[in-house]
Image 1 (cartoon, rainbow, N blue to C red):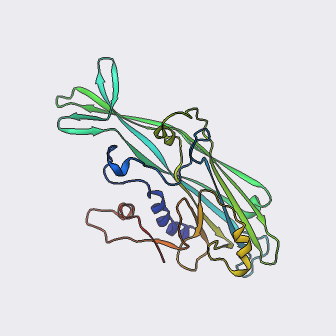
Image 2: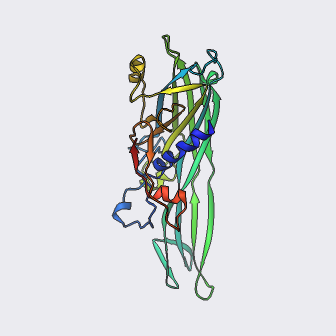
Image 3: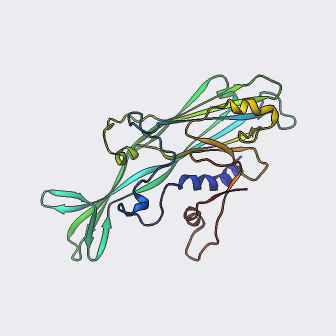
Amino acid sequence: MTAPLEAARRVADAVLYEGYPLHPYRATAGENRSRWQFGVLVPPSCPGEPSASVTECLLEECVEEGLKEGGDVTLDLRLRFLHVRGRTVERVEDDGYWPVPKLTIGGHDYRSSEEATEREARAVLSLAQVMGGQRVVDVHVPCDRIIEPIAGPGDERTGRIVCEHQPLDAEMRISAERLPGPYGLVRLRVEVENTAAWEGADAPREEALRRSLVAAHLLIGVSGGAFVSLLDPPLWAETAARRCHNENTWPVLVGEPGRRDVVLSSPIILYDHPAVALPALTMTEQPAETARRHLRVRRT
């Protein structure tokens, strides 16, 4: 299961960085005035944006020859998202440090900005563990703070850069139920919720984003079974596919055409088996860097 999931990660990376400009960030630039737009799950007390997503998809049991009903079907779930990191430039004053948009020292500009850190939470469960009940996976990312001093031409103290992550708390709630009929269909449900206890309901969006899951999406792999397309289901699965309920996410098959062992539950609308169109590498770019600079998902 690992190899198909790793192949699907290339498409998932395109989703992860869809709303994240990788060019040098300037807060006044027009393209940066509304950042972090895709797959944002804010704290529950934050109005105007969702704090949770719901993914429902269909799974066939017993598709492998010799597999007994109720046999070893294993789910590999990976919740992936960006964690906003504040990068605040502070200038030395008589009474301490004060944040500033920009500090110029020795001809070099130091700018306050926001960055992002990739996060991933993983759970490996058997289908039997989630059938008829719900398993809750807690996700906790602790806070951290790094201070980088800024020295002047004579090594005098002139300022500092404070890089800080706020803590994140979330839950994955996984359940499944066997559907009636002769086809061995199972409906898998995964709820993802930001559970942060945040009291800043009236705070600016920028503050809420530091306690949010950004570009949140799921990669779900299966062994001992196969997913059913919700976009183009076989005739016998059309009714079950229509009854799948998805909120703030669109589950599609990923991997090579014909593969049905990985689903990407994406915060942007995709077709089954999307692929990332990559240009040739330059001499100075690394493969992952190039992928993130040319995020165009094409239909195969």
